[in-house]
Amino acid sequence: MPLLQKVKSAYLLWYEYYQIIPKTHRHSLGVRIDALFVEIIEALATASFLVREEKLPYVRLAIRKVDTLKIFLMILWETKSLDNKKYIALSVKIDEIGRMLGGWYGQLQKQNSPNKGEK
Image (cartoon, rainbow, N blue to C red; front, side, top):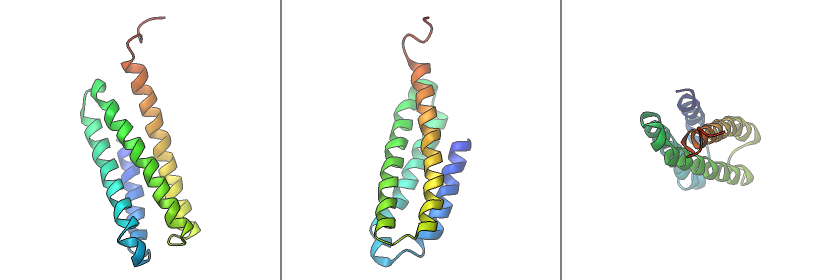
């Protein structure tokens, strides 16, 4: 699944940065960001194995987690715990994940809508 691969790639990049962010944030925001990545991966893995009608809540959950992740990363950047280059590298990946999730969500909504056969 390409989306899961992208999230894994973003997580591996985050994990590199996690090792070097200041201790004050590593044990607070860093831990929370790490947990959000894991929760996103869990939601996507779950959704990928469900029938189409059951995927929507998990995709929606992943979208909420990605939005929260963006905010936490922005806080790290604004507090100078993450430099511009690292923040941009992560943000580009996470924005792409967000767009892919949004597309998947829209597609699932159309497929699951009660009047999909009418027109």
